[in-house]
Every structure is written in C-alpha cells, then in structure tokens.
Length: 162
Image (tube, rainbow, N blue to C red; front, side):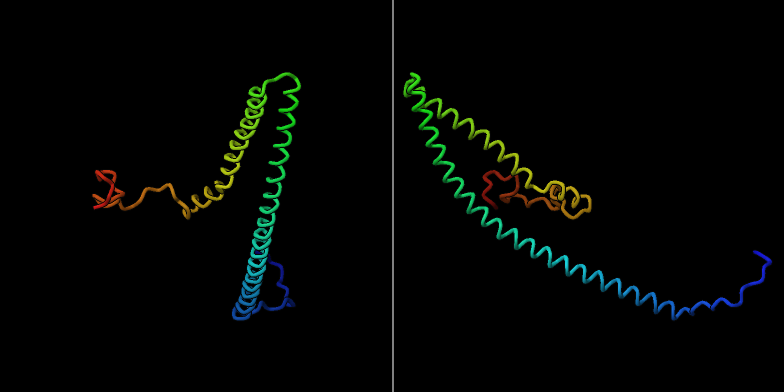
C-alpha cells in the first residue's frame, strides 16, 4: 500500500441495497429488450413463412405453365428433327429411334439431378447439429424390443401378429 494520504473528497460508494436496485433494473430492462427482440423475430419468421408459402404456390403454377409449353415445344422440335433426318436419308425407324434415345437420355439425366437435389432437402446439417445437442437422435436403437410373436418381431413366422 502507499503512504500517501487518502483523498477525502471522493464520494462514498453507494450502499448495497441501492446497487442491487440498479442491477435489478438493468436486468429487467435487458429481459424486456430480449422479449421484444423475440417477438419481433417471431413476427419476422411468421411473415417470411407466409411469403414463402405464397411464393411457392405461384411458383408451382408457373412451373406447370412452363412444363406444358416446354413439352409442346419439345414435341415440335422433335418433329422437326425427325423431318430433317428423313430429308437426309434416315429411315423412319432410325429417325424415331434417335429422337427417342435423345429424349430418354435427357430424362435419365434429369431424374439423376432431381434425386441429387432432393437429397439436399434432408436438412443434414441441421440434423447433425441437433444430434450433437441430443435433440434429434433417430439412429439410436429402440429401448424396448418388440414383444415376442408380434408383427414387428423378426422371429414371428408369419408376421401376422400374435
């Protein structure tokens, strides 16, 4: 410690009751602010889901229009391609087979891409995080095995129940 004289002009610290009142008021203000923020966020999420729901319906309707006109355009292009192949000396069988092969190849590619994109809808990152928190463990085995002789028992001969 120092030997210097203390400054006696400094105000006395507030007593414990006043300090607790100030801390309590600050805590209530922080809680009120957090509650207001939660309400605002809930309203934002609700409005965002309503917008997404409306946009999904409209997008689905326009996707239907695009499919109809795309299919009719593809039929016209295929017909023109077949007529062009006929002019170049291909037989009807060759022309139709080549057009069908092209259509099947594009269809197969589209099916493969759809499968890949639907895999993205599985929310795998969210599931991993929820599993880390212990909230969404669907890979855990069941605690109670099925009763013997029931349809869920692999030992049941006819799987028809008891």
